[in-house]
Image (cartoon, rainbow, N blue to C red):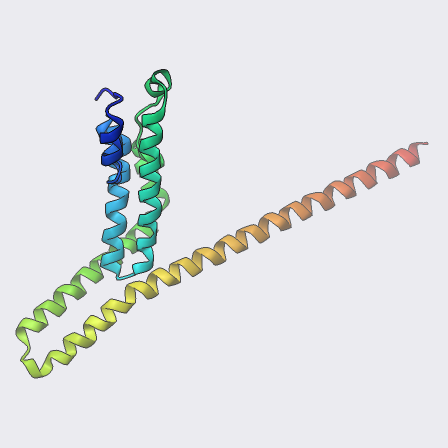
Length: 198
């Protein structure tokens, strides 16, 4: 689809919905990326029952809004030079095979957790139909467990990633320190060798 500058007022109105402003000007790939990201953030926040994730929606909305209006304010030549590309490296999808091969365990764990979550929700609904009213407390307990587990899992993953980042930083500092010491030792040995030659 050919990109084209259009009414600034209509672009402004369209940009109030993440991705729609970009699509209106013909940047379909950019618009689709932003719209999908915004929608997925809402879905994940609702499904996981973690309201804090919804904060990212605010960031995504402002990014999309100002990005669309910035595109509309470009000169004709600059506007024509803007390439319509998927955001966040989605254009590299042909390399998804190598990505899956590299992170197949993480993907597998993610799919297993998703499957367990869906089965758990189905079991709660099924038991609510099968069990008499006096046993509804079982489904309530199951619902509470299912309600808090995603938050615990996400929190644990965030802590794990944080620890890994700290460890990675320590390793970098250690490597730099080791390299510096090696250079100093090499320098000293060269100086000693030169003195011996004299």
